[in-house]
Image (cartoon, rainbow, N blue to C red; front, top):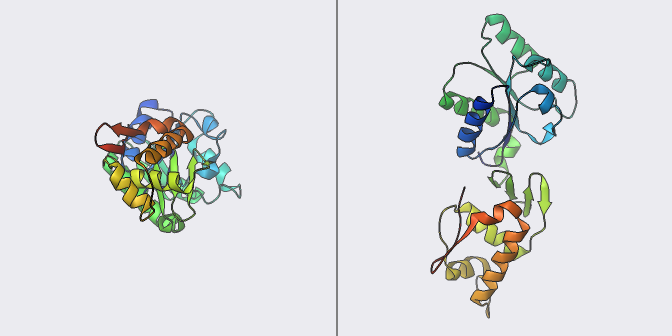
Length: 227
């Protein structure tokens, strides 16, 4: 399910962090907001799914959902309500607004993950088909040969792109310089080990905070190590 961005909106900060941690472990990119007011200041169009609490501050989850459904840019963003309000009328209200699912508190994390994946399979088939890799806010669109960080495209050379793709696709696996030469430079001749080091150094700088994830294993090679 890599490549999907999820926003969790709930006034319980601990719950937001628990959901964020577990969903990121499943390969999703997750942001959180502790109120509808905070969420409405964000660029919601970049999210593939909202996990939305109902009982929040002045703007409830129901009201926020209503607002989003009235705007063309956000009308089609799937919404899962997560709430302690589990009466039949509340559930009907949620679905009438346009919710894609409704989960009552308390819930198991496994249940949330299963429901999230089910909704995304139903509502975002195009994203499912695209060839995307991600780690937190770092995204690689393999089809379009583009890299972006938090929605901003990063300009990489062909070799830098291929090195990052190789390492991210195989997180935790160490590649020797010889491995990288064979997989990225293929049959090209007169390529020195130093060339790989130079490309790695440039790549680290270009991907900012994620540069530290490209780790050197002295005597062995390089790997992409998740924090």
